[in-house]
Length: 438
Image (cartoon, rainbow, N blue to C red; front, side, top):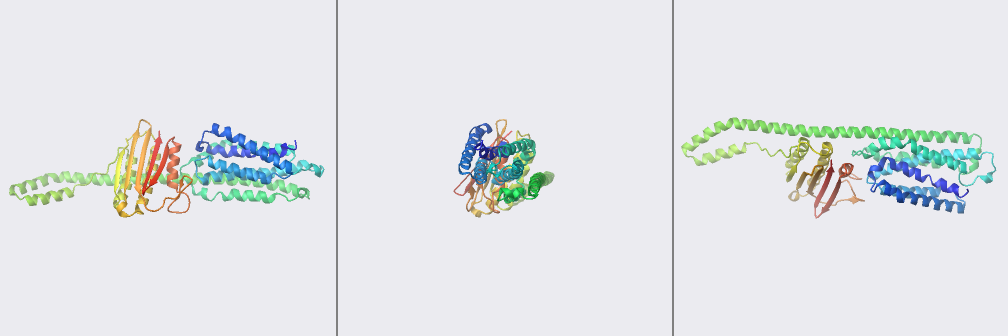
């Protein structure tokens, strides 16, 4: 029974890992069943080994628990496809909540041992307290299952990268530090005066404050993501409006050209009767130059056509060669908004890279078409100058410090649909291939 106490104290790592996996199930690099087969025995073995070490040396479990938590956090982050900001924040939030539960159970343990000989107060919780500790952890994981697999999961899976992910990780660290600071140096301290009652109140207050701030963060992130999505939709609508105005102007010019065609033919006939070949050539040259360019229609899908046309106009304005081979019907088997987000992210990155490239080397090439009845294939190539910064498969932003958001968003959209995205770069050529599944 003595040996069981430190092992069970360390065993709370398992419900903590389970809770952290709830909102990121769809982002695992391997199937959940396969992950459980090796991860559960590994954690159980580490907890048992750590418990034996603590028992043999009669030492508290806190330092071993910290080491186990760090190992579990590294494994957790490495098994996910999402950003380090997201996975790290989720892991820290779970650690903070369980740190609050640990403090609460320390107070429960002190209450259970009150009045008993000090010899019975080992460096670990008593057996009843450690069972209560486990019960609270598993109960909390069960209660948090629904919000974690619904609201939190939607926030984590959202391709919009809310700025709150960059700052919220500080809050769990503060709560973890507070709970560590609250650990009494001597066990007898809790039995001094009304310290134990105050300790209970502070532990419960910290737990509820942690849950409250987590809920606030969740609402903030969902709100920010919703606003970003609305901005993206407005941007797509703006692109469509610009394309509509351009097409309307081209149609009006074509109508006027048709209206003037009869007069132009009469003028040509008069020049032909005079036999003035040079005037006929000059007249034809001027007439051809006034014919509007109709190289503005890229595909039948209006949304994709608007996005491609918008970036085509920007590229032409900067004198960047822009090659398009796109064949997308009006009705797509994949989500239209996701397709447009992928196109806009890739073309915007390609345009920005081209602007930083020597003018003689600038080039953008887009290829997009359907394969079968459920796949959309997109490829964007562009030239670049400078150095591509990549860390752990994540490309670093060239506009600010930290990870690049555009390619992460593209990868997440592709993987969420069951597709895939690949990036290659060599000899000044950058190529992104994306497969979207309907």
